Image (cartoon, rainbow, N blue to C red; front, top):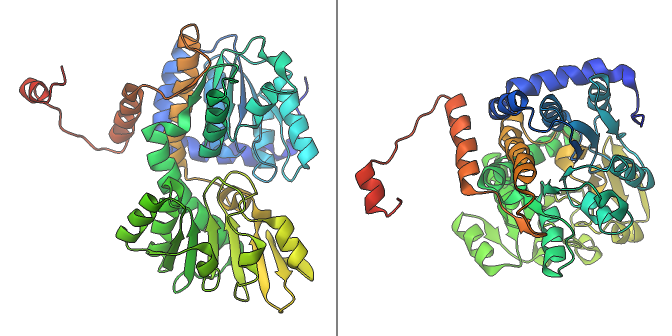
Length: 413
């Protein structure tokens, strides 16, 4: 089946981007060399539905070199980079993705990817899994299992698992230490502010930044905002996380109070309606609203549109909404993931760890599917330590090892 992309002539630019990240992903390179030597995925079809930019493209390339028939589609209408999609097609992979596609086209691309009846899926957010449990159960015939990249998708998986409805085993790649400790904290922390600053060309220093949610992504985003000189306010529903934010040196208050004082708002909860119309009415003139959660539901856009007397393109990737009191609320990247819809996503060195987890999770599914039941699994800790060891070595660091006596003292043998 023929690929659907924007423009194949863009391939040269995309190949340049992929070569750049290749140099900064030594862990995935080392794992990829082993997979390629073994031809681990020979004859298997792998569908990858992850934000289609250079790091994802390089993961797809690694799987392809290891023998897989790789089919790639996006996981968000605004995060696909058309030149990267073109580069993959030029290199012989199948791609269904275009930047700025409609919601209808986005799901059409997912359906076309599933038309290849994969043995393994790599999902980001759970839309592929959702289709496989509803309108595309025909594509289950070859499926051995899959992996999930992000918190939102893992939450959806646990809902299916708890209800006894999960139809195939899934690896929660997001729950591996080498994913969430680095990707969610350091990756989201940096890339969110990359996207905001690139899009607005405004300072962060001196501003009051409101972080909605203090999970691993919120921790990273708050830490980076503090480093940029902002006064950071955290909103939370979990009292334990709220105490942690206080002990980390941040102010904590409800969103209703934060709405009156914040200059920049960033939502990172994975839930809906974190910022609602009642909050928007209280906001200062010129505030920035950004979302770094997977879906564009954390900022209630319908309520914002209903409140506004007009809206206009304030700048590329910024829509200004004028309220009846004359205040302007600026929504970045249509409320979608600001780090990807308005930036290049996480740094390559971070995705080196995350996609190393994904590659080994796909291998784990292939090697263990016969013993895995239809539940959500976390990779064995030994795989995390293997990935971390490769990364440390590539960075030129060494660590101590325990002696036999020390291991015995700790009852490790």
